[in-house]
Length: 216
Image (cartoon, rainbow, N blue to C red; front, side, top):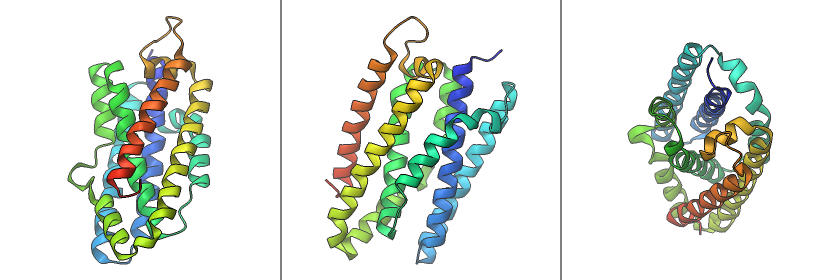
């Protein structure tokens, strides 16, 4: 029988991938240039492909997408509802920030995973050569309208706060998953303290990314 924590991690990544697909497809629909529409549509297609791979892996482990994702629908949907973009600039900021946070999260926890699970995780979040495109779109948007910089910086900070809030709720409710993510397992270590340190590192990486995006 597969460890609950591994199924939960795959479910978390799977629902995150579904949400990312929806978000990127919506961004493609909102884009005003054909070039941007095509790039974002290709990213969305890749993310849907990732979801298919996760479905196959979950089936191999005796679970299903629906069963594995259900626990993470509420926190991820709540995050998206509280960070709904209102402008094209905010759409791009959200794409950049979420993509960065997911990559930082994967980098932080990969050392606690076995080789097979690590490969599945990294493969499920990889946008390949298209990964830098939303950042380039944001740079162009800021160049065209520099006055939105302050508002977008505030939006980016609000996104981080909401993301960390939802992550803390998941960590408190999912002890097995938290043990896997921190590497402490079930040895009685202080998982929540370890998660707090993880959140601090993610926040520091976010600040660096905001600066690189011109939103410090």
